[in-house]
Length: 350
Image (tube, rainbow, N blue to C red; front, side):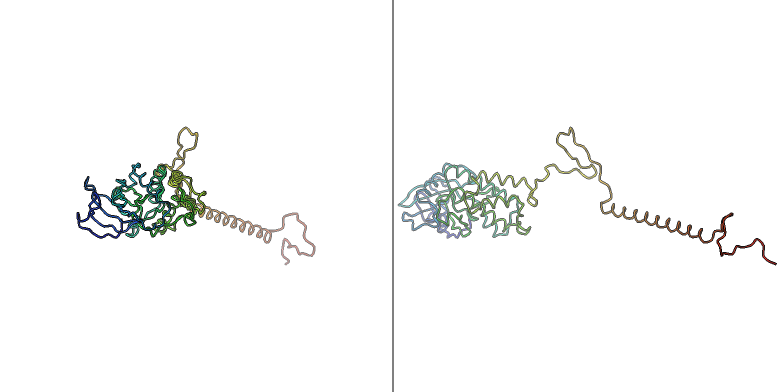
């Protein structure tokens, strides 16, 4: 989970029916331990909250609401939620035991240099919204979704930790919704704002940053923009609605905002099939010409130049023939002599 821990000798310290295996350090409202339940020898995360509860850390709900939401976790069975094992009281302290989550948090993944691509980002967002939909249906809000609260399990799915009083990590990366900063009531739309903010941070931290981020025509950009609207009423009405918007983004090309073709083109030698609505069968288009468009244009210019050259040669020859006949041809028989011009005689004078 990426937390500081202090090893404790097994069996030396006991808290009620639990034997402390490892001290995981301070957590919101109390202390956290890795412990073994002596009744079942099952290992769990044990959170011990003292009766005094010295203050609250970014408390977004009353203690009674958080306790009721924690107990409600026991009614949810979802692979994206850590199983709640027990909520009990011992020596004036509240004990909250839940299953240990295996895997690496998104914060650890990013620290180790791993970066999500667009498809992974959308998949993660869909998983988080599915988990939230289950929790919201039971009246449970999360209130502090951040990289440290999301764990990538070895099987490849996400686990969202930190509901109710099970929160273990002080979230330095937490982005609070505007309504919480204004002291207003935290709602379902506040959780959606947190998911949108998380996906935005992953976008700029991930491989999408090297590709210039999300284009303004990318539907994923529009989904995140709506989810992180400053006005809660402008956001999605539910996690299910936002998840459907993400699924629509999957079906749309991210660079152009246009739906991609679902059928792959045929090889060039077989021709491309164009299917038209109402056509009884696909019609094969004519094979492409071997010449490119640029080659055809050059060929046409060459033919025009040759034609112009031939026309020019014909014009020059016709002009020369015409001038030659005008200058050197004899006067036709019966033609009258021009006055003042000498006419050659038939015989020379002796």
